[in-house]
Image (cartoon, rainbow, N blue to C red):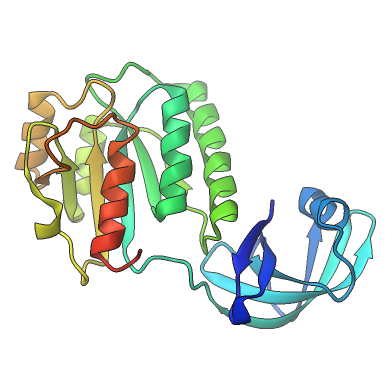
Length: 251
């Protein structure tokens, strides 16, 4: 899938994710090749951008169009200019399926680095075994599509769902901010221009239980507020992430 991204000289070029490669030539096959040839109707000599999903962009020129295959010459390569300087991991209490898909899509567009679904005490959704992996696979495809559409330099990872206690163990070495409808400190006191990595924790539809908030607090999490109004579970991560991007100079 392509996205129109702004490149040097304000020239708009289609953009595609590809596996990492070496050298000055590249090949695109499958659905993306069909999209280039049949939908965008690009020709030999036209230019597009490839991204290796690890933060490097490649400015390329089409050298050959064959059936189901596009050959390209790499004209230039550079670090992706669209990636935030702050890496944000979102630990999201599992909401209903369509809400999780919305959260993933929009948070990837805003700039999240990683999303970890978490089973909390008030979660309506329960995932296990094959169903859990099936959901994760679908969520990863949604993240990939959102990364392509928004011109990201990476594809954010959608991790396998964790239990609440497993999340607490994972958070031990991280700088953690939990957003709680029961109140907390202003986010501007916890995040600034020099913040390079942060993990944020958002509750499900029913919010956190008191016991969960206490466990997070005891494990070193900072408790923050997003204002006096109670936000839905699909609204809170978007607002939190957007404010973090603003406070760190990434908007």
